[in-house]
Image 1 (tube, rainbow, N blue to C red):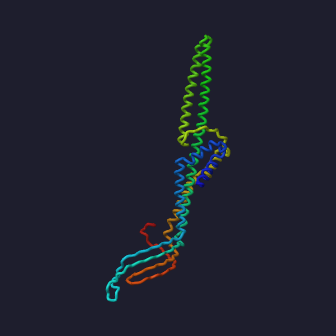
Image 2: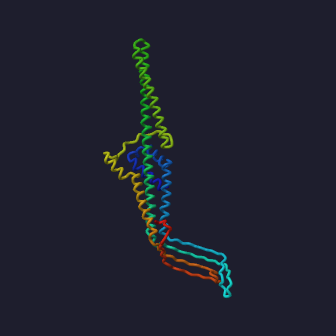
Image 3: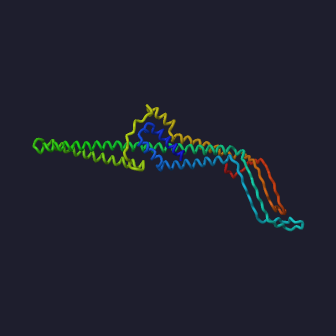
Length: 310
């Protein structure tokens, strides 16, 4: 959970460097990062790939196997008189094995899983930044259309006052029909603009809820963003250098290269160090116990694998 908190804080610090002074925007960003389903899905993928990366470390570690068996064994013509020997056979073995060389396959597999993890982490970062961008856009839209609606309402109230004054002059015989009609049309237009502004505001609220998950409360106008590139060329250069989607794609290339190296492993011999102990009884027609311990270097070189490695 700490790692997730550090990640979210880092994303916010990178993506919203000048907006952290607006606490409400910061809180909205944290809410989105902690609860948005796309981010949660990417986070789960990172965790899954991390487990696979940890699993790849297992190739460097030794194995320890305990094997036991018991059953009936018939050894034909083992007795001096030529008769069969029937015994209850039992066996127990403990084998410690440490791989020393496997055609660089262990290194390549670990590199592949590490590249997968890096790609997944960059993909998560990219998804978070895209969602933060959408969140910032809908946040600002709500503020913008809220302001437009307020101005439209004030505009309608101003036209109502003017209309009332002109209507009073007209009723007293001072105003003209043209003035009265002109003010009425302007009031109607202002009311139509108010309705349109309210519709735009409601649409902005809907888009906000679709991204954030809840309706906005009292939003604060964020401060000016600092650290933006001065030119388009600088912005493009920063994008090529830092964009998480590009970094994720590069990590995918690294994964492919590591997978190619791992595919070469079957063409090399395999060398293992093995220590084994066995405790056997009544084997091969001989009534009795047999114990032994071996310490071996084992070399295995596959010569044919059914064309699977071609």
